[in-house]
Every structure is written in C-alpha cells, then in structure tokens.
Image (cartoon, rainbow, N blue to C red):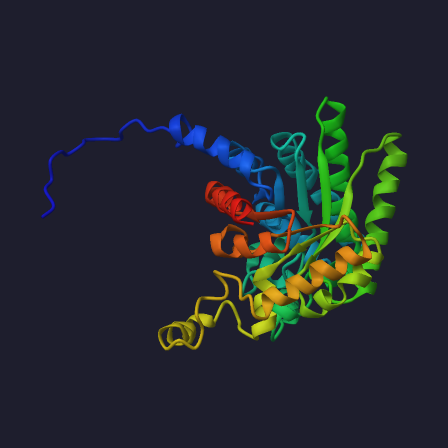
Length: 371
C-alpha cells in the first residue's frame, strides 16, 4: 500500500539530468564500441546543444518547418501574397530569421555535421482553419478574399499533395531563401572561428528529375552567395528517400550527384503499407491483438517490405556511388530492434530524438558487438 511520508511546500530546487559517474563511464565505452554514428533530430540551438551533451555526433534531421511556425506572420504573408513582388518581400523578411536560426544550430554543433531538410509540409498547415480579421488586415485582404484563399489551399490528401520538393519546385523562391540562409549562416560561423558542416537535404523526391532540379537550384544559390561574400565552404547535397519509387530509383539518384541518402522511414512505411499514420489508430490495435501484424510498423521497422526497400536502395545507391553515406531519420532511428537491422545493412548513422540518443548509442554498440 502507498504511504505518504512527506509533503513538500513550494517549489523545490531541481537540476538537469546529466550522464555522469558510472553511467558516464559506461557510455564512454559504448561510444568506443559502436560503429554506426548516432545523430539527433533537432530544430533549435538549445535542442542541438542538449543532443550533443547526450552523445549525439551531429544533427541528422533539422526540420525547418518548425522554425517557420516561430515566424508565422511572415510565413502567412508569403503564402497569401497575390503578386510575385509581395511574395518576394515576405521571403526577404524571412531570410534573416532563418539565418539566425541556422547560426544557433551551427554554433551548438560546431565541427559536427548538421543536416537541414528544406521545407516539407503542405503550406495550408501554416494557415488558420477559417478567415481571421487580424490576418486579413495584415495581408491587406478582405475577409471574403482571405476565406477563398484559405479554401483554395486545402487539399483532399495533403500528405501526397503540394509538399516536399514539389513545393520547392513550384515555389523556387522558398528553396533559394532557405539555401541562402543556410550558407550565409555557415559562413558567419566560419568567420567567427567556427567549423560548420552543413548538409542540405531535399525532401520527398519521387523522380531523378526532381532531385536534379533542386540540386541545380541549391548549387546556383550557394555559388551566388560565395561570389557575393568572396569566400566559400564545403557543404553536401543529399536527399530523403521516403517514397517507394525513389527507393527503386536510388542508383540513378546517386549517379545524379546525391552525396547522401537519409531514409524517412515514417513516410516510407506509410506509403508502402498504404496506412495513414494519422488514422492508423482506428484499426492497428485490432491488427496487433489478433496477430495480423507482429509489431507496430511505425515503431519497429517492417523488415519484410519496408526494410527490403531500404536494403535495395542502400545497395543500389552504393553500387552507383561507392562511399555514399546512408542513414535513417524516422522514428525507427531510435528503436533498438530497428537499429540492429540498419546495422546489418552497414548504415553510417541513425538519427533520433535527443532524448533517445543514449538508448540509440547503446543499441548501436550492441549491434556492432553482435555483427
């Protein structure tokens, strides 16, 4: 029976958890044994710093859409602009905000790789469900026109609609602004004595031509910044493999110049199974209880199909480009059973939540010892 032995009045002093003492020594041994790098998914300088303290060897996924939510008025102005001039004006105002965001992450992860995914989600996610007078005034639209604009942005199936690289292709000014912010931020950190290692990741490709389009735009934007600043630095361009078609075209994508593959296993699982991750709760518990599936495929990688797409992609990509860096940045990147599978494919890294980094490090060390 539970016994109440002490009642504390007021706020008690607390301290942040630290990996120290015997656990710290053990984790040092873990770091020595593992052969697969463990990176973190982090979107702010503070999260990046915490991940580094927990043993992360860099950032495997920086989701720029999370930064956009911090600058929502400017983002909404950009989305709802009715002319190219107005849209570009909003993009220009977003540039210094993004640059500052990236600088803080590069400083927190100095000398370590930082993989930044270009804007991925559908634009309607940044808009309210209904027209609001404050927003209408801000973008200089009538309530009726704003309601129409919001309605026009809605999609029947937004996760398969205007998102990922499709957004950067149809709205190239977004890609240009983000790449400029990344490169300028990295140069600023380099100028102050740091050693940033930026990696630009193109999301949700399904064809080689999509990758080539965005790669050319990224390279041209970076070269323009280098010319303006009269200085340069090394950076990499890669892509997320999260669409089955992209996985099957991996050799061609690698040959087109991808310097790394990052498997977005959340979307890859969703598209391979035909399950909506947002709606799977309506039937998945029944499937698990009645043994129609052995595990939740969004928690532990499905080796039979999703895992085979990752294997084929890894092998074909490396055949086309020996030394191609590959890793995983979905939820599976923090799951011990999935990490063991990725180790058998000789992946270079997994990336997970900063809170799961120690467990992922231990799983990677166990996999290295076993294989």
